Image 1 (spheres, rainbow, N blue to C red):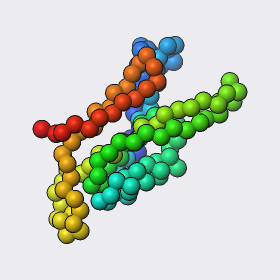
Image 2: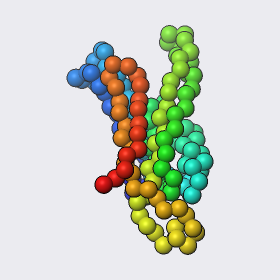
Image 3: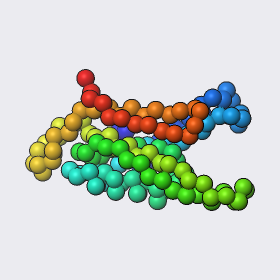
Length: 137
């Protein structure tokens, strides 16, 4: 995602032909260029906390602005006031590394960024997510 002042939110429905159809599995994916990149993986993880402070209840968060590509999972418990239940929900965090070999990265001794893609799989039968990083060709 190029530098932007905004978020991109993608709403994905599987196993249903129209909005509101029964039996569908719904996913929400939030994307942002990112703001707290750096050379270390912990900085990549930290920027996902900023996401959760701004936009909640998404299933997948994708960000960049880093020199350390990675994926992590977290889980939260949410209270459903309609059903009077507490449910657990997994959240997938994907950090895409910059592919640009910028002069500032060399000046600051940032590591060379591996060229890779993140492949995110969403399933319609169960609410589960899977991700893997694969080498870019």
